Length: 450
Image (cartoon, rainbow, N blue to C red; front, top):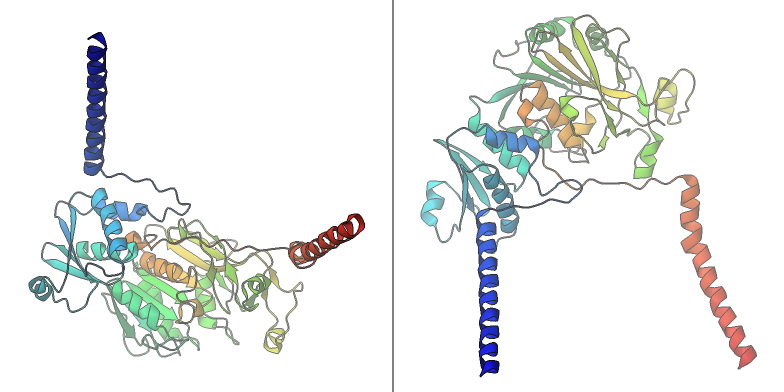
């Protein structure tokens, strides 16, 4: 009888413990279900919202944000988007989202004028923004558009052989122009010899002029800048110096070099010596947390003067590698064979500079190259972010700076001449010889002792 009672209590204790353990598991599951938490251990934090996105979400106000994603159940990219939207919802409780299959909800598709799978509609009050790309960059920029009082206006100058905005060829600015449109900018052109800069212009861009401006055309730029405007200059190294720009920029503390940057490090990446690689950046909002390389083909130096005029602040923005130099002998450049001598400027060399004025909203950004923003190079490494960050900052859109989409940082392996020889000798020569020698030794050993 005692054994039966003991067995009963043992089973009861075991059952009670099992039920308590099951209840604990259920409780933990319910807590985890209610409070979603994740930890991102990746080096580049690619599964975490950028600090700027979190800041934008905090500043949205009391009005709720609704996202309607028109995706089919098995459509590629749906899971990726849902993971991204979850992060947004966790950062702001007023951010809500839902997925709608256009085939199952034709009424909703008609209300929101959706005629294509994969369309994302973001609503706030009576305003809507549509997004097609599943990236943090596009979603956050759409949120910013919903909170802006008005669209920013960018004016590109024309009449001096500048880049063509709608040109889809390799040298055109079609990609750049299209991206500005998706970021809610109004883009138009202005001919300074005939018309004034529009009063609503937030930024003026001079993109790759092939000839110098006239003094009468420089005056509107000066007046616009001094009134607190933004100006972005993308100037290529010309055979003949751009005298008006060279003289004018010195007044703001910038030296526009009449030279061409030579960078032999480009050979490591399979490029030409005339494509300098930028891996060092100045301390500025445009390049804050910028950790990707940029490529500026056929560029000239843009450096700060030793004594900056009083009231101005000049920040050199992007620098070439240590082994580069600014070639000033144009006979060598045209001949295709260049060598470093005492007349040249040794690297690292600044290819871009920013000018700000105390107690003024004026913003001047100068690059010694316009090719890095053309269709052939726009999406190359960090070029897109560099030019778009420059536009956003100069146009007074500081919130758009550094919220660009994140990706896995490339880590190129650069070997010295000695390391390259070792890498060739060990696998190509040493290991085969070792394998052959070992096999020969085994063969001779067997013949001798067989």
